Image (cartoon, rainbow, N blue to C red):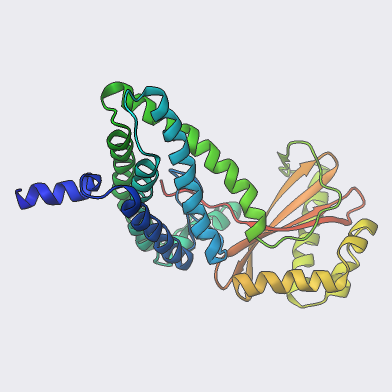
Length: 338
């Protein structure tokens, strides 16, 4: 065989040589290695097709993301294969080659390692909230270059996923392509739902006894509006509350709680929650900004905090008496590079 042809086959159809248990073993090793590298750069594959750089998390969480993405797509494509394939096929071939198809994600993690890829989105969001549109030109160029560099590897991974489906299930043509696209979209939704259930296990959070139930709407201060000072005061109270946590003045922080929170989160538990956050994300460095929401009489302030390893939102919920009725530590949302 022509060496060039062999190289092309290895890159775009390695399943010609590798399938079954061997592909499964190599694929799981690739997922594990990708999770390890992803943990260094805080690169999350929080969906079959999604790549985000966000909050720090335990190593197991990054590995679990890859496994969830692989299983969701493999199960959906297995069902699709059973429906459209005219021949029998081995489950281990499909699951094994789908695991191996995810190996280009390793290169995406490598591209996302430079700190500018994590720093720039956070700084950009914080500046935009403050009405400041001055950005470091070099950071902008590097961020865009890295984001664009990821796209070929994402396309490569999708091509391998389709080839795995086509070869393992013995299907091809327009019917196979259409079925694969539909399966990919369904698996994307399923993986997203699974991530929602997984996040609370990885991100430390304090309980919120009086959790509002309705959908949230943003608060905007209007010049001359009587609510302007109230919103400003609420934001100030939230940043002050975070300052108390930073100073380890938990007694003063507890004094801001309502009666239910004082029972649910006494001083020892609050201290433990804050120490757990810093143990996982590194020492607190600074506050980056705030944003407000309102839900059925509750005012919610997200105080974006920069820690040594990553950023995190401290979500402080205030009741109508301006007492703290809930407290969360949640991932900071950042733009997707896709």
